[in-house]
Image (cartoon, rainbow, N blue to C red; front, top):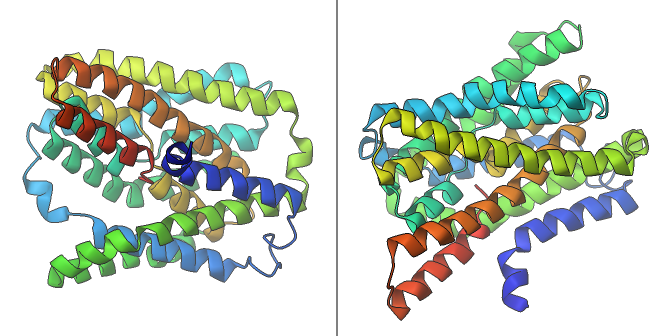
Length: 350
């Protein structure tokens, strides 16, 4: 029981943060003792600084071949997943609020996970070097693509004039500068930066939990959640599972078209079907900070918060099956190492 709680601690704390925000929204809402625009900006800045400190960009040169594998992953991350999401949302436009549908659209354009995709790829016998390249490149590209696509969609969807220049200036300060600063420090203090990034990773988790709490507290104070029915919540949860299963199946089927090896196909599957909470949540939050008048912050986070644990459960189940095929007769030590690695992967933020 204790091991299970420890393994899923991050997800449980996220749920706890949502519950506290629902019961006691005043402290976390805007104007409360904990929440202000400055605290959110600092939180996002720190998260991307940590990412810059921990991203092993020097290792990109190891796994960049075959290029068709990375084109496939990026195509699913930023083209095919969003296109499929638009089709899947068509029957839901009558039952879901626009804010929730926007959350699904934001989910579709987010980058892949980093740690989880790499760990599950390794457990399943995939190409780890390819997974490292694909995940890092997808996350670096997201800093440019996600805000651009999101702001363009919001400006059209809300029929309001969005001043892009000041918004992108804010996003540059919130996202790019801390990432670059972290990378510069990592370049000159490589060994120490790796050690520091591992030790301060829990702080990044707590910042994410804090941001989620403030977003939901603000939504409770504004009255948004009063519009949500039990049917809407169940529809979001079930739709998230359907999206995950459909995308996972199509990714696996379409990966055969690039004629990969078995190891490369496994890599393509995990890197193309997963979505990052650790990068996605700060990206969405930064957009909301830059344009707070456009949409409710918590509403667009709900699909991502549902998708994240669901993808970990599915990836854990699939990696178990593939690991059994890879290690038909594992030694007790091999079996222990695989179980330990999987347990750590489920606690990953990326």
